[in-house]
Length: 624
Image 1 (cartoon, rainbow, N blue to C red):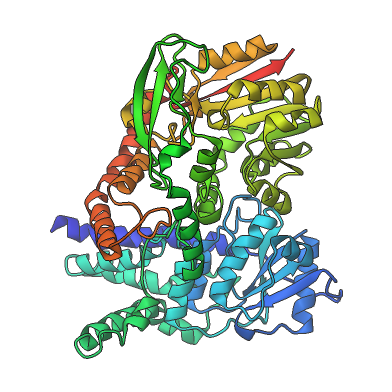
Image 2: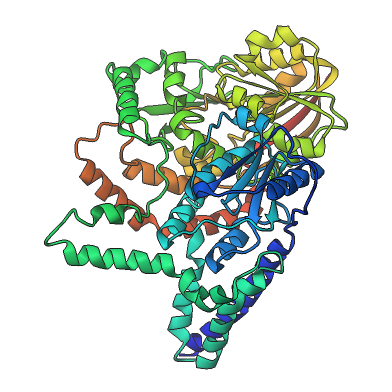
């Protein structure tokens, strides 16, 4: 009873703190001022659901964008309903949004001003869009204009009418990788209901504060119509009410019309993001046919002959350390890793052929897995900034080898704004990085094949979690020596095969990434190889190079092993219904272990970041 008595008080305090947080966000919104200047010839406008802007509004928006150096401007109506106002404040931290290069594109999803160059580089040709369309468009545009995308209130702009169903569709699109994100208000209401009888006064205070929240959050920047303030509690819960009505209607009509309301219910369906799954049946059939052709001869053909000696030192005293599987995509195959007793080098044995590497890389960093890979790469700027700051000032020309989509180069510009950042990668994402402007020049291909073309050109070359993917790491070091200027720096970060994390999590450890990682280099071996090539080691760092996420990734790998994601085009699924049921049961059974994994991750970090225990290490070496 005592716990229930404190629930409404805790909710009241939480609502007050959250109201202050959201108000601070909207208070930072600028207001586009009237202007007599003509609309800039490169500015185009995109409005949801047939909205309109008059000439004065277009001039004000265009002048604001030019004044603040913006290529993309989300235009916020000066008057919003309670649900829209709160959704905007929850989605966008306007105090950091423009400067945050990795922030997801968010806004009011009503109107956009876009520079034509950004629209062209993004390859977008939008027409007749709605709010849900603007979610995806705004996300894309922010990637192409990472520090020139902003928001501003545009007086006179009216928001298009919408239903609760539309609001939930927008939320589902915006929170598709965080489906629990919109559930905060529902949890608040449930806690209030649970404690209302034990502490009615606190419950009443929390309810009143919650009802007044939209008007307070608006901060004078975004108004709430007086009539809407009265019906705000109903407006904010309209989507949930419509969902409940749909569910109730489905239950009542099921005996008479099993499929009658299924179509209506489909729009409410809440499910985890469908990574590695095609969007349409035609595309799925095409991809599945390609994988079936690849697998017709079995996966054993993707492996070379087994080695009897170490590829690093030639020693013959080998022992198996791990036999693992593809724990991310659940592609078929088992892979053994051996350790040399003489030099402690860990390597895949037998090793994947070039054709095999193509098979296991496909749809991982691009294609079906592209969005998930981008989500992971954009999880936070901290590691990228630490890597950028690891070199002496001030780099002139920097080549990032294995750059992917260029996330490091994008963030490193905050540290070294005058540096030219080029990227090299074997994947097509390197061209996308150039189109976005995240790198200056894209080099596509194998580093050893291209090194002579820019011999002595770069004063910094970086390889972040790249060497372990290569078939011959020493050839890559030779290429770096060729491409560097005398006195230039080589910055390398790789998994640490001697880390306790490798023993704890085994084949599910993030540093293994089976089967993509071919060679795992102990720090002594890498230092010796660099020294042999004329490099001077300036820093060897463990500690903070430790990459968080081993425990949650092991949890995900276990789920994939026990019940792979349904519909994967590289897996035959003769009983789809059974596979979905198995997946649901596995996630339900292992779900409680995910918080435990997160706690284990936090508890072990102090131990793993001391000494040389980190699951990764970083080497800074100077040539000559």
